[in-house]
Length: 381
Image 1 (cartoon, rainbow, N blue to C red):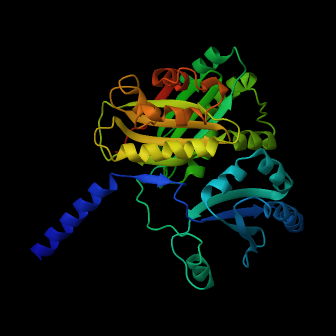
Image 2 (cartoon, one colour):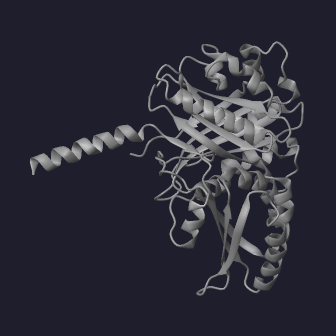
Image 3 (cartoon, rainbow, N blue to C red):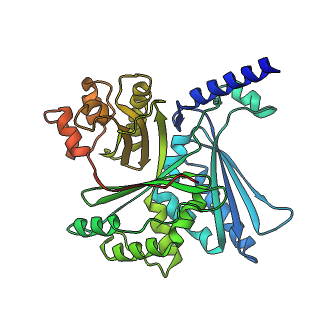
């Protein structure tokens, strides 16, 4: 009995140690399954079906799309399920975050009460699908190890000249209650600005959608959102649910890669860097940064302890926890394992960061974001 317990403890300690090295990414090349749960208004089923059929014809021609299915609950006719398969995650994300997608799904929203989207890499399968995989459709080679935290960000721009006022409003709000429900809590909110662009990154344990709804309902948060409304470049009317939905759809900045080195240091500083990509180069730029961060995470000398890359269209933001600050190791801070990779990075960046002298310090100055607030929730008692 003693031997068994000792072995169990050693296995547990080994698992805990292994779990410190976390890598989550959309760039592993494996196929993607998207599940969309839809709650349709009573009596609107036919309208929803017709809108789906029209959308389905358009989705079929999207690069990377393989197939999809529409299912209706046998217990509740208002509950529907849409599943789709994609060659990999990047083409799906490029489509779902595009203006084309915003326009494509618009006819469906008048008949939908609620939706929930889930995205999965395909790890294993059986039957005919497995034979197709052996013919060249790649599966995920092994399961990833996470840390139980979901990372997401929102980004939007404000009217030029209003940056100081917006920063003041965003810095001085009362934090919402961290506990969402028995399974979900807010862990950390970090808010940055780069010129007139605002980026709010959040970390959640549990249900991301429940956390976002919880935050939106808080009076103190709603008051700040109302206060910055006049300064937004994209108009938003809280009395019009469609206006709010479109605003937050366009503001979503998904995490496409996250890696931790497995090291902890209470002195590490949180910073964000903004990489405006050349048109159409956002996903490629995000993948380059992800590759460099994976290499850095395997180097015990790297000052970057954690890195999350967010991407939507041509907006790429990298959130890092780094020892010693940005200026102590500019190349590592930018996501470059050596300064010789500056040329590769600049070929993907917009004109404002195009090659001039090409030095790391100049790029770091261009990418650096201003920290507005960084708040961690108190741990559970």
